[in-house]
Structure formats: C-alpha cells, structure tokens
Amino acid sequence: MSLFVQRLESHTPIGAEARDALLSLPAQRQEVRAHTDFIQVGSHVEHASLVAEGLVGRFGQTGDGRRQIVALYIPGEVIDLQTVIVPHVTTAMTALCNSTVLKIAHDDLRAIGLKHPEIATAFWRSCVLDSGIVAQWLVNIGQRPARSRLAHLFCEMATRYRTLDQSDGRRYRLPMTQEQLGDALGLTSVHVNRTLQGLREERLVSVARDSIEILDWDALAAAGEFDRTYLSAA
Image (cartoon, rainbow, N blue to C red):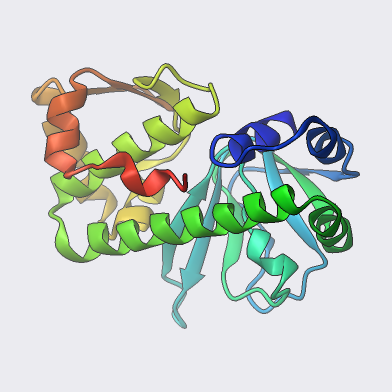
C-alpha cells in the first residue's frame, strides 16, 4: 500500500491525514499464479486491484483466442481504478508471473475520495496517466518498427519502476516471456527474439531471464523515440 501512496504522491501533493487514511484502507490479499487470468471480460467488480508483487497485464481477446496485452502494471499501481466509476469490465487481467494483488472495495475508495479531495484529485490524475500510456502504446504498435517498439517499452518500464524506487532507472525486473512481449508489441515471439538479439549486439541492453539492464540510455531512448513527458501528470 505504501508503494501506491508513493505513486500518487509522485504527481499529487497529499497531506499527512490523507496519507494515513490511504495506508489504513482495508484490502483483501489475493495470490495469483503465473499465466492465470483473475479478472474476466464482462465481469462486474466491486473492488479495484492494487499490484503488491509481480507483474500484471491487461488484455483484449479476439473470438478465436488471440490476445493483445494493452497495458502492464507493476507493484504500487492499481490496474483498474476506473472501475470505481464504471464497474463493468471490458478487458481482462492476467498475472504474467506469480503475483500478489490487494483488492480494495469501491465503496472504501469512493468514501476516501469524498472525505479527502486531494485523494480524489490523485485518483483522477492516475486515470489520466493510464490513458496517456495507452495512447503511446497505440502509436508504438501502429507506427513504429519492431526495434523502436521494444526500445520504447524498455524505456517506459525503467521510468515507471524508477518512480517507485524499484530501479535505478537502468536495471529492473521484467518477468515476461518473449511470447508475452510479443503480445504487448504486436509481434511474433520469433520477431521479438530477433529484435532482442539486435539490441544486444548494439550494446543497448543486456537481457537476463527476467531482468533488463539498459547499457546506453540515450541511444535506446533515441531508438524508441521515447519522451517521458506522458508519464507525468504534474
């Protein structure tokens, strides 16, 4: 919960009383195994889900079962804050690795927002940030070549992890398979493999089984046309 508060405070000033109220929110802990869907399309939910550990993907699915990951969520981020207003789920959620989720009741989130206006503002800004990320992902998939798509994703995730002090801005954990990366970038796993190999050969990144190290930030950001402005709602 403290990571969630830290993310809100990264873009919205929150007073001590409001901060204590956030930290005191009751939550139900849910352990989710890797590759498990825990929110289905068409569900009606009465809680929002905060990632406490692991990595969660939001995805859409075609009639023949093909998936497109449309967003990633790291510890400290709420995956579906918009359901506080619209509780009908139009995209599903899956754990990309073993993950822990805290379920916070909509009623409690609405009550704390009404009592503390700065929290309501922070929730609103979080939704604005999420929409900005989705817009960038659309451009990434629709207009950029594979090398730029992957470079942009690596830069974005480094920035998001650093905001929550889970990275030094260059090394971070990204427990995604090449197939999952392909689902997020609109590429086949074979194409992802070739593109990763190219970034390695250029000495832009070092990729381990579940972690990324950016070796040349400026070159990687240039390759991905990455501008971190959209990750700030200040």
